[in-house]
Structures are given as C-alpha cells and as structure tokens.
Image (cartoon, rainbow, N blue to C red; front, side, top):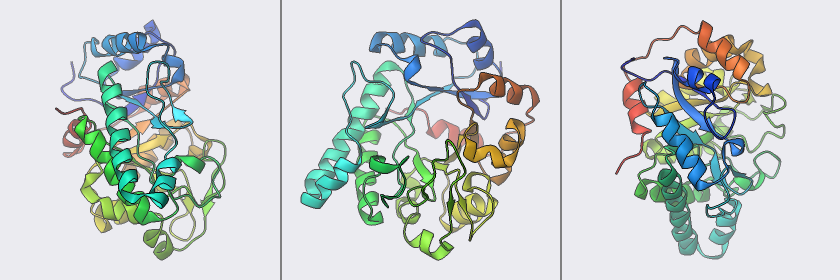
Length: 316
C-alpha cells in the first residue's frame, strides 16, 4: 500500500461502487473522488457510498463535492436547501451584520451536513465577482464589490471551520467578467493585470492563508498570459504563490472541460497543470480519459504535497 495519496481526483458512475470504480479508486495515483448528483439518492445511500470508499485498502481518499448552494448543490433530498450566494450579497446591501451572520450559518450547515455523510470537502466558496456578464457564474457570486465578496467569504469560511471543513476559493483570478462558459468553450478576459489584481483577484490577496485551497479558472487573461490561468506559471507561481503569498493546495478545474482543451490530450493537460503549479487535477465525467491519464502519468510529489493534502481533511 502506498504511503501517500496521488494527485488525481476522479469520479464514479453511480450510487454504489462498481468493479471498475474500485479498480480506478485503488490506483496509487488517485488521491480523491468527486461526487455528483448521479451519485446521490438519499442521506443513507450516500453515507453508505462514502463508507465503501473509506473501506478501500489504500491511503484515505479525499471525498469531494461541488455543494455551493443554488443551482450548484449536488445533494438535495434530506439536505438543507442552500440559497444562491447572490442572496447573501443582496442581504448585505440591506443589513451588513445580518448578512455576515447568515453567511456563517450557511457555511456551518454546508460543512456539518456533508461531514455527517462522510464528505471531506465542498469546492466552495465562489470568489468570482458578479459583473453581470457571465451566465455560468451568475447568482453563484456573492456581489460585484470585491470587499463585500471578501467579508462574506470570511464569514462563510468561518462557518465551514466551525464544522471542521476546509475551503476552496474559485475560480482564480476571477471568472465573473468573461462571458463564455469554460465548460463549452475557452473564455477570454482582455483586461490588464493591474485591473484584475485590484478587482477580481483582490479577495485572494485579502483572504491570504484563510484559504486552504484555490481552484484556477480555465480562462485566458490575454494581457497577462496566452495560456488559461490553470496552465499558467505566471498566474499560479509568480502571482498566486509569490506575489500573493498563497501556501495552500491548488486544484485544477475539471480537465475534461472545453476550456482545458488548449493544452492537448488528457495527459498533456495534466502535465501542463502540474508544470504551472497545480497540486491536484480533476478528471470528471470521462472514465476513459481518467484511465488513460492514470496509465500514462509520471508524477512525484513535492515536499509540500502531503502537508497541503492533510490540511484538506476534516478537523475536529
């Protein structure tokens, strides 16, 4: 049995593990699994599924889900219905203290309910600004003002922390301005670096190490780098790591998205993400590509990987 987890996060087909799922999750390069709505029928069922995953004879996998609220909430029946984050921003405009209190409550609910069924991490919060131009972000964003986004995020992350759950800010340095949906095409943002850092990326600078993880966008910021942020050394190493001082985990966004296709085939995409500075990569909804990557990837953990990975596991 390997002593440490691998850098690839994969998904599974249904509501219980198949033979193929078990084989894939047992691969030494796999470090996590992401669950989707297709993997959920009830609290009891998803609890049993997480127990199945935990029972695999291998280093513990990080069990993840996109559970932000609003239209991005994978588990519903038996779970609290979380409103879109925009509603917290609208509450802020009426009552700042009430909004902060509510954000903390929401974070604690998300964390506690997911932890109760065996999930380690929700890929939340969304730090994108509500420019009104991105349909894929839309009401997932808290607010247009980066200061409001930062303070509501701090409150939501405090709630996650109370439940023992880490956090993942996304989509660095900001997906809210670009119009295209990176699931289906490659978005571009032509603003200059100073503008992006002062506006969309500002929450990342202000939150600092309160963020345990960051997920970069499959967006090209053409004035900064011709590559999408998730494949850009300038964005991830020069700016996020060195300029902003971020020391936590960097997850790629899903490498099967159209916005990632610019980097080549699935192995080339993963290698490009690692070379840019990602610690872990997600391969979702394409088990054939996941298997191709696991068969071909050569990877060695750097000295910080295990420490960053351990910070993602629930505490308390």
